[in-house]
Amino acid sequence: MLYVVACIVLQYLDDKSQIKDAVRMAEIGLTSTWTLDDFKVAIAKYISSPPMSDTNLKFAFEELLERAREKEEKESKKRKRLADEFYELLHPSKEITTSSKWEDCKSLFGDRQVASFSFIDLELVT
Image 1 (spheres, rainbow, N blue to C red):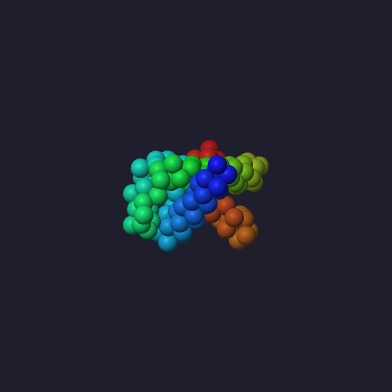
Image 2: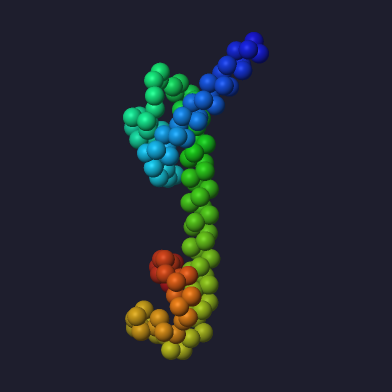
């Protein structure tokens, strides 16, 4: 019995390693919106024979999906924090109005601040 369990675990670890290699080779940008079927299609040509079990594929996919969700959440929090900082920077300024253009306001900030806020979704700020 223990031998069977060990074989199953070893097969899962081997399949998981093969899946991770396939994700790297294919440069798959897995996001939280992916389905198992999307994933199967994306890695199909990178998985060698014999075919791996659907159970192992599903477990590995769920692990990668959870990691993708965590990454997206972390990125979302970072963007929100930067948007809040940007708002706090803009709020007290009397030189900036609703009709101001970004190009005209850039000079009010240091180059470093402009670079750190360059990817903020301005809708978050408003």
